[in-house]
Image (cartoon, helix red, strand yellow):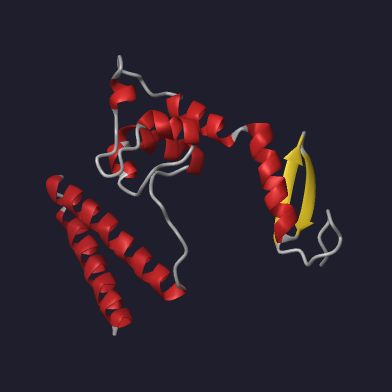
Length: 168
């Protein structure tokens, strides 16, 4: 499929725009996609948007935010607000108090669930299920619901056996 803008190159980027509930699909080559991204950033000001979101719902202590810096790279929270990006991986820890609510608003979660091979996804799901069941088991024991606790224990053992088989 050819690029919708230049009509010369093969399209490698597929963009869906929704404006006033009207959906427009664009098929772009890499060069036109870069230009489109540049235009969008100029028009919408991605750094300003992220900076504005960074303040949304966060109490700014008197002067505390301007002093907050990453120990690893020296990047400040104000630098993040201006640039719309962090200086290094350690910045996530340094600014975690402020970034956690921001990431939750933007992504819907404060945990990253990236792509993984299907076998690994199954293992992660089983591991998460085991953790959930263990929490329920502790609650059942605390509430002295021993029959329920025994059922949960058996489910946990079954999942752990399944996980051991998958590993082999």
